[in-house]
Length: 70
Image (cartoon, rainbow, N blue to C red; front, top):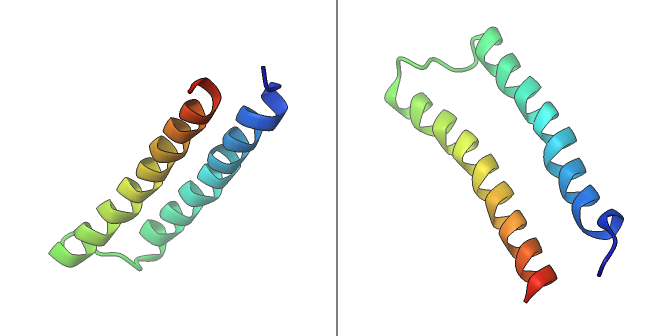
């Protein structure tokens, strides 16, 4: 079995620490007024950013599991 340090720690670091920076960036975007969620195109791109983060998190986790247990 592959040790946790080679499989899950990098994933947790990438999406944990990266997620903190992503969240801080999203908060700055909202607080600075760089996005107006009343506009349809701004809501669209805001959702794309959030969806993209979770899409790649799930995608990466899935293929890590496939690589470990296939």
